[in-house]
Length: 230
Ligand code: OAD
Ligand code: ZN
Image 1 (cartoon, helix red, strand yellow):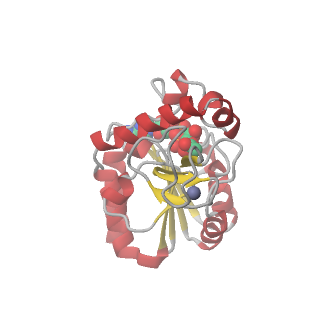
Image 2 (image 1 turned 60 degrees about the vertical axis):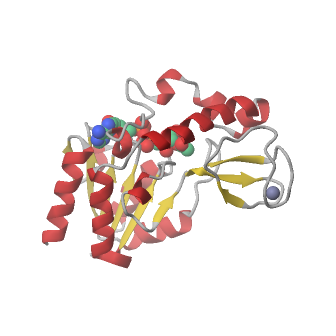
Image 3 (image 1 turned 90 degrees about the vertical axis):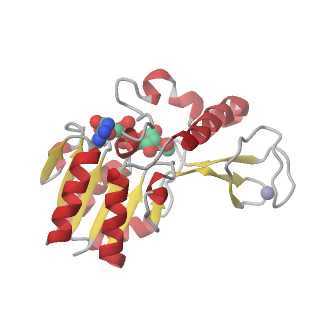
């Protein structure tokens, strides 16, 4: 059985990472158009660096949870028949044991140099004066995050997997942001069974064949146990 799993902020919520659109979510308190667009970065790079620096630093305070670990177990069992796609920019899937994670929205712990087009692992703060360790340019590094208006990464691979999978599962995502919100329909049109695992019904629940609602640390390990028992 080929399985594609898409995760969103909800899988990291119980680890202490805020989601975006829940009542205390990041975009309920801050304006994404001032922080998460290329135009915002051009207008006020220090503000945007500050926002992502705080989020990067927060990763040191959090740990993966049972839902991240359960998906790592599934990867070990299914091997190449499993693809984990995440919209999350944290590293909790990796720290939960997953080896191959498709970070379609980029990663907090990576910087991208717009001068030499290199991606560099980055655990520290970035500033408007930070020098690129590869080419030496100052102030040309940006967080390697896919902002609104930019194309998510590895879309060809993802669409290929959606076209050939037997099952598609969306975990902890509101279904508000495209193209990820459209994956369920692509998989369904290709004949896959579709399942939503989310705290509550999302904007896209009606697009899924089946759903289970509850906290990820409960419903994800239960789902993985079922698949492993098949
Ligand atoms: P959202 O904040 O939009 O949605 C999070 C979803 O997780 C909601 O449907 C919640 O009900 C659900 N949820 C909350 N706590 C949960 C829990 N403990 N267990 C299970 N589900 C829970 O986050 P995303 O859908 O990931 O983009 O947002 C998509 C993109 O919008 C993000 O990748 C980000 C943002 O702008 C970038 O950073 C580029
Ligand atoms: Zn460079």
